[in-house]
Length: 265
Image (cartoon, rainbow, N blue to C red):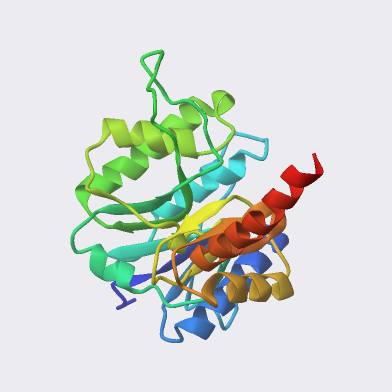
């Protein structure tokens, strides 16, 4: 394989392979020349995957659902690319984001915050205050000695402390403390988890939606978040986006109603 940069999915089981295929189809629609690899445990063919790498599942001792997270990290460690963008299977691509490959000329690992995961990270039995997990559903990395060591440590820490972690993200954070890699924190436009409230920067479109949903809902949310690219806030319970104009509108309504409320008291 001659491609030095590409996109990686790791999936097993028909449900998640189909989910990865759907995500890959959205990626190909936005960036047709993308090179995409699927790492899985059984032969699979799809026009949306340029390469399929087989990796056995039998070597994993864990029998719970956490075995899938062990497999995920193992798959990430097998990336065939010099520069990799790993994507969870429940992502949906709505805008090009290949600029991340250029950023990897300057950084080794790039990842976005997780606004939901507030699990404490403990080092030597002591909580590291204010150190909250990133979301490993979108992960860009270059192939260096340091990133290899980092991913290997991520895997070993997760396996060793499997019973204490509900996801692989705490192990990721512990590996970050242990191994010195050049890290860049991505904006949420690259990992827009629309089940959470999220602030979005001015003049930037969301590139990647991340959460399970129907195609119709993905398209609807894409229109909502990118129809106006001013500084804005996504309010998840309402499934609505609010910007500065929205604020001025609400202030106007408040200015009209507030005197009426005071009069009626």
